Length: 146
Image (cartoon, rainbow, N blue to C red):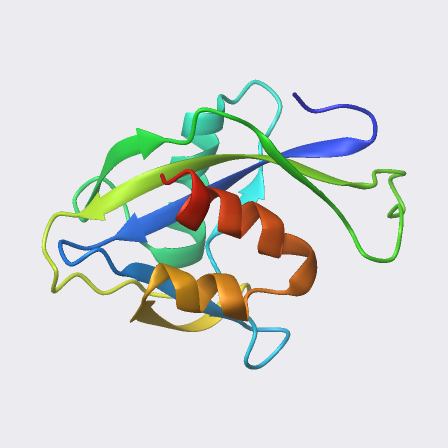
């Protein structure tokens, strides 16, 4: 689904048995919360990219979480200030849902992308994510479910 105008990307939703979502605070913008996400590398499937990004950004892997779902559609958003240096206007994303194997699991934010984390309700995260990502978050986390 990537194109010369949109970068292929994945998003990892980590949930617990109570339906809470693991939200992460960005290291570059205090008070900005989101889910782990990142680009799909050449030769990598979206699922492989989701596992890689989750591990790189949170330290979580197959011993702490299990893959339980994939949102069936790509979502897309445009960056607010127009095309970036690479000429791309935004990102298209595949969303993957992971369930912690034990509610006591704690991620280890990488410090580069994220500095802290907390369990939140889906609606809270939709309300707190940066504006240009909000429609995708709403669609996946609230409207159509993942």
